[in-house]
Length: 299
Image (cartoon, rainbow, N blue to C red; front, side, top):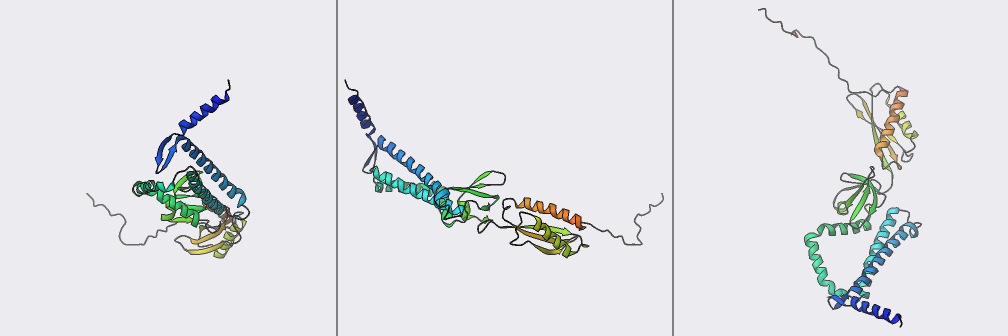
């Protein structure tokens, strides 16, 4: 007695059961076997598209395109195109007539019109971001109260990493309909202003020399563009200056850079006898014939 015919008969019966049509789309019958094969094919396409994106960003485009944001945008667009056309090929290969999906597409369109406006808005906004690239991976941006580095741009949302190591997910529509501050859109140079006040007895030229020397000695301040000092005005208690410096390495932490410069300015002023004033008020009493305290009449 041979076991092979029985196995073949069992497999044939299982295929017959799995091949029975469950429903039909237009003139195409869909069975459980066809559903499983379509699902596996789509999973392979998604995995292959992700691998292709990773390969483009980290290897194939590395030498030709040095901008990480540009490589990421091209990789993401390629991934979505591969998935889109892969779905079309799989459905056509499975014998599903795509023209019969027109009714389903109309139904989805009605659903978008009534309840999926935000999803559709974020989807098309994500495409605009990837094509126009107002922001890209690695940019330092500010959207509303959110300030951080762009670490990921997806088709629906963008991930921003703040200085507190917190990932904030921002819908893509915010980048299209709202004002976005991109600190590194053209380059990574950032100007930081440090206001300083000194007493009226100080020599402005000496103050300017000390401030420029402090900027020159700091390792994170650029020589080009060169630092400069602005004599901004005459305050109530001080001569007001502003030290303006440029940095490339401290674009994520401008407040810390300003703090470090303030420490160095305070130390340099102390060595050179430059006084940093505090608000003072002089009160002058004028003589008068009116007594300050009235005498009480005797009882």
